Image 1 (cartoon, rainbow, N blue to C red):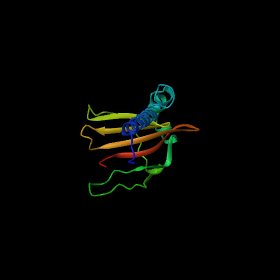
Image 2 (image 1 turned 120 degrees about the horizontal axis):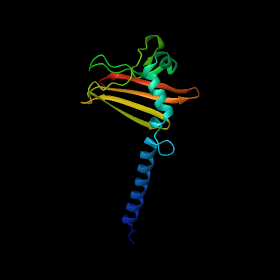
Image 3 (image 1 turned 60 degrees about the vertical axis):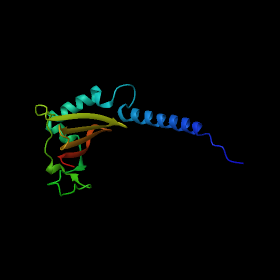
Image 4 (image 1 turned 120 degrees about the vertical axis):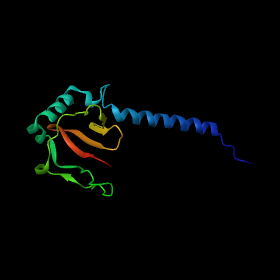
Length: 149
């Protein structure tokens, strides 16, 4: 006796599972709790503004040695994946400037970490910073220097 398989039932179950997984993932990418992404909270906005304006504050809110990547010197050089920024070599970050529309900025939050991406209009040059809330407040926890990756 041939085995009968009801493919339509499997298709419906697969569709529902796929939809549920994608819905959960998209929500987790942008919303932490409630309806407001972390990067839009007053607490983070106040921190971010002071981070770009106050060099002493900035130095106190960077976790050194800071994980990240230094921009490759040229297109034939690979970025060092184990690079760490050191306090003595740190160049103070200034407030965001779009250079008359040349650069764009996006924020995203995932599991309490705020990810900021800055990129030029062509998408050739990118920069990424990640901020995490530690017991002593918000800190820069990752920095990928503006460059070609």
